[in-house]
Amino acid sequence: MEFAATPARSTLRAKMSATTPPAISTPKGDHIRRVAIVFSGGPAPAANAVISAAATSFMEDGREVVGFFHGYSNLQDYHPVTHRLLPDEHYRIFVERDVNGLRNSRGIVIGTARTNPGKGIDRPEHLTDPERTARLRNVYNALVDLDIHALISIGGDDTLKTANFLYEYQSRLPPEARRVQVVHLPKTIDNDYRGIDFTFGFFTAVDVMAKELQNLRADAIATSSYFVVETMGRKAGWLSYGVAIAGEANLVLAVEDVTGPLVVTEDGESRLSLEALVERIVDLIIARERRGKHYGTIVLAEGLAEMLPASQTRELPRDEHGHLSLGRIDLGKLVAGRVTRRYEQKTGRKKKATGLQLGYESRCAPPHAFDVMLGSADRGEPRRPHGQHRGSARPALRAVQGAGQPADPQDRGPLHPARRRLPPPRPVPRDPHRQDRRVEPRPPLRALTGGEAQWTETPPVILSGGARVSS
Image (cartoon, rainbow, N blue to C red; front, side, top):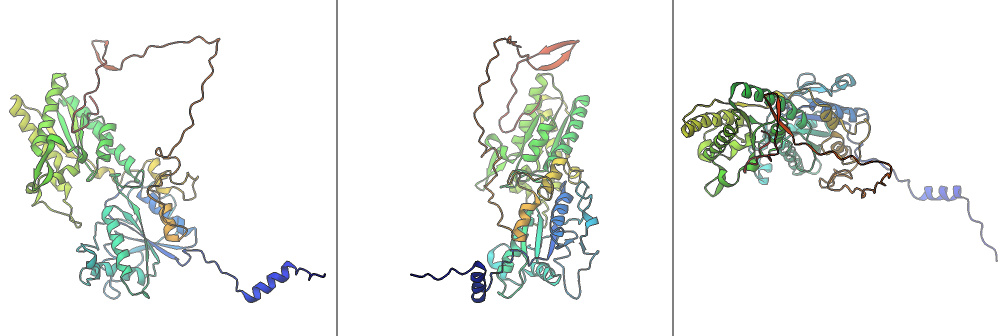
């Protein structure tokens, strides 16, 4: 029996290519040649590190990067005839010299604004209302006319909402209409973003305000007075607690602490009782005086003002996004004035309490190395384990470039404490020739009086409804 000879591989390859066209693999995201960056909302330290990392990532990949000035303020007013957007006046086309040496600088290289193109859109059906979506349509038209293929949105909750509106608006356009891909990168010094470990700028802001608080503490000691300090932190107490702990405050209260006696009910909703808050602070002052402490600093998160009864906030001004203008309420001064009066009523003595706000001075402070690294992570620098820190620019950019889907927010990486698995400690063999030396621990030094050390083992005092963080 004779068998036909097996054809050579080259012959088989030639026959297959003659009948089957070769598969052409086009990497996802290659159609994106021009990317825009918009920064919106309040400033944050290391903002330029994030912008630099985002711009450099695309520029090194041969793509053009445009930075729009002052958030959405020019985009929402765009008109192809009456309000054209011009280079170097309304936006910048980044080149290498623009981003070199940028990441440690103060401020925001492209500026920011609180403009809200989605104002008036409250329900899904509003996205098909030409009147309500007029400004959103202007943003879309500007991006298309400038040949923008993808938009990187950097900002907080409201900027995220605008980015989502832009995506949803495009999903309702005809199938043949151009689409601009949108990615949002979280920005807030409040560190209240779910799904990431830290937001860039948080630690810098804490450090700047904590140093200010330490100065105020020294002033309070020298003058036997109190400072009631309001810090930023609308929805969570990360920032206020960080400032209070690092700045050695005597009491800190955030929105999470409004429980028990601090709560008053109005129209079925739990609100903050301003009278109970003042009473808590006055009780602390009196308790500290019994211990010979006639000074102190108290930290309040600005979000407490939003929890006041509606009858006290109904006439107060609001911003473009409908939020109370917390800076105008001046919670620190409001509480300090009432504390002074209530203390005199209870004791018959006078006590100076000064209220002030901290926050604005930290937003454009020189960023810490940690915040710079967080904002620049995975952009050609020494690589970190994937998922170790959420909040860097590169993971979000991959979604724009099409290299993969955004990571699952619950996937916190192998080094996150929730997933870390450490091996059991190995037993250390005892050296029979070594003599054990036992040193008795000494209690902490609390005060020096009369040249002799006074030692105490008194446990720290914990006040319910607020953390006691220092004596």
